[in-house]
Image (cartoon, rainbow, N blue to C red; front, side, top):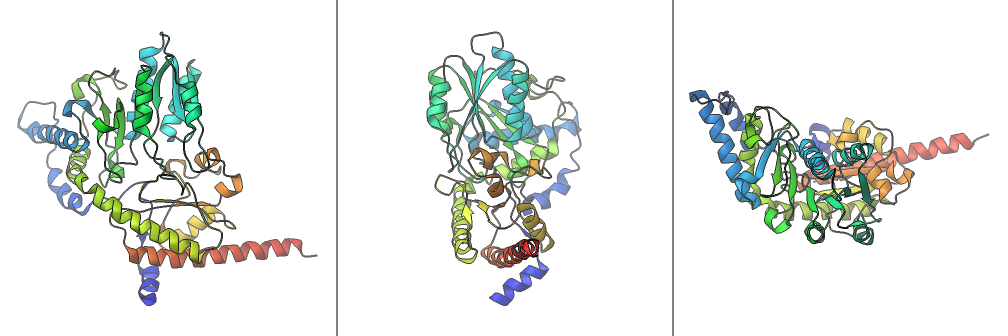
Amino acid sequence: MLDVIREMEIKSRVYLDSNATTGLSAELQSQLPAFLREFGNPSSIHWASRGPKTVLRETRQELAKQLGCHPLELVFTSGGSESNNTVIRMAFETFAHTERCEFITSQVEHPSVIKAFQNLETLGAVVHYVPVNLDGQLDLEFFNSQLSERTALVSIMLANNETGTIFPVQALAEKAHAVGALFHSDCVQALGKIPLNLQDLGVDYASFSAHKFYALKGSGLLYAKRGAPYVSMIHGGGQERHRRGGTENTLGIFALGLQARRLGETAEHAEQMKDLRDYFEMKLARDISGVKVTAKNGPRLPNTSSLVIPGVDGETLLMSLDLKGYAVSTGAACSSGNPEPSPVLLAMGLSREEAQSSLRVSLGWETTVEEIDAFLLTLKKTVEHLRALQTHGASHDLSP
């Protein structure tokens, strides 16, 4: 078995960064070439438009069926960032001149949420950022103290992209509705990792991105509950019932629709990923000294391990692993190249040194135990090597 693992180290590339993006499903890869011939504009009324128009209708229906909502409550977008910004900006424009002029979000949201709210602050909005503890859990006392009849919108993600922490969105949405506030949730990381039903979740708005669920980048979804306020952020034609101007990304929507049919498999895959993640973390604790699993004591996505590995620099470790064929991350992919440590980990109370020693491993539906075993062996060797270099360097600095 050890020989097989070593052979995989040399010959294979192993992808363990599914929270950044997933690979395309095999079924999608096989069917995409045929759909490329469907080039028509779905807004036209001639023969070339019929195929794309049918794709829009059938994909919307399939997604609604799988997510537990009405088809007309779904708006196709370019992805999670557009969906998040649309809701946040819409809420500001809707309530800007009313007594509901405050907003609540968390300190660990995706940058597309944090920066959208920071932009609103420059326009005069009052935004309350809910802190989190070392387990990544929200400070509910703070949330309750800031929620009031002045709250226009609460935006809390369902699952964190870096730590995998799952937040009690259903309970928070009930509290928000009790004071008349709207509730939005960035559900991008939850799709395909935990079962989802929007009616049960009880939110007014939810954001999704296709490339987190084995489909194409540049395509996404915004759920807007029937009766909830809606203001288009992209003005143009009458697409999406005048809710989002611009010719639809029919190729991306086709891919998302194809994957949507597999959402019913989520619970089964979630259990498999959890077993594999727990196996990984168990062996990791045994093989590498000092490793800490961030947010381990709270509810997490079944595929995500956020690690602090003392004695190594996270970026150096990532590059070393990359050279050996392993794709992992130090945090959010959208912040790649930023020399500063993860704001999410700092908000949780980790020191800068700990945050800069972080590594995120996120499994996918196709990840195997053989890949994990090979990765563990490589990770152990790499950490030992980097720690030895650091110790040697420190000793050299102290020499006379």
